[in-house]
Amino acid sequence: MINMSKVIHEPTLGTIRMVENALKRTKRYPSKNQLWRSLPKQMQYPTFKATLDYLEESKKIIYDRDGSIIWIFADNPKLKKLLRETTRFR
Image (tube, rainbow, N blue to C red; front, top):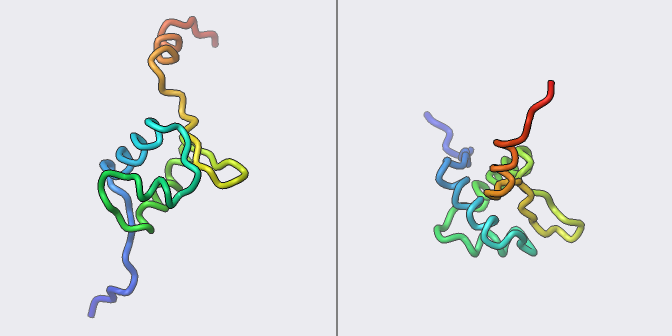
């Protein structure tokens, strides 16, 4: 018999991108709940939490003292161009 009591909530790439795009648009959300409710598609909260854990571990978001979620990943076009054109030292 298969034990179905433990459901694994692993986010898909599409889920991660959906949350990233929501964060990029606004740059800051006052709470996890507000971000979760603003997403264009519904997802289970444990999956959402796993997505936020991944984004925090990959240094794309941080949490402010008040719990606000802040997008910190440097992904703007000017920075990408600067990194491409900069001389690298060894």
